[in-house]
Structure formats: structure tokens, C-alpha cells
Image (cartoon, rainbow, N blue to C red; front, side):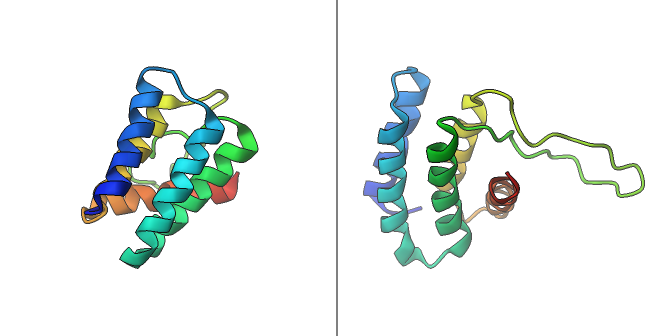
Length: 122
């Protein structure tokens, strides 16, 4: 992402989470601002990820999605892997936020798609 204002907002959220001095409603407002800024990038995966993330935070008052697995899904031996966390998963939220800063990387975009699937399934 090349927009300085959006990056500053993401970094602000990351700092608040790292110091554990955050208010969910404030994070939601910041994510909404980032989404407004990034809509001009015409990246539907990013735009959707931002909307789904703040809707998820609003509904749950926590980030309950696990970091997407790097393991390929073997359909023959598919085992049930939980994509949800029972409690607030700040490490996953930090990772999610880091993906937002560089959507030009294919793997980042793929992980954002996985987060989107998890948000929708919840």
C-alpha cells in the first residue's frame, strides 16, 4: 500500500495492540478510515477484508480468527483444523494488519482471501 495516511492508521492500530492499550471501537473507526482510503486502489480483496474485519470486531468485540495455515489441504486425509480462536487472538490480528500494508505480494493477497473466508464462515 502506498498511501501514507492508511499506513499511519494501520501502524497506530498495531502499536495500540502491541502495548495492549486499545479500544475496539477506536480500532473499528480506524479500519473504516483505512477502507475509505484504499477503495481508490480498486483491490476488492483488500476492501472486503477491511470491511469484514471491522464487522467481525464489532460483532465479537475481539479478533477470533486464527492465522491461515501454510499447509496445503489434502482432501483425502483432510483433518478438521479450526480457523477460529476461543479468545481474542492478537497475534493473528497483528498478522492480518501486516498483510494490509503490502497487497502486491501474492502470498499476502492469498492470506487475506483466507481471512475473508473465515470472516464470512463465522
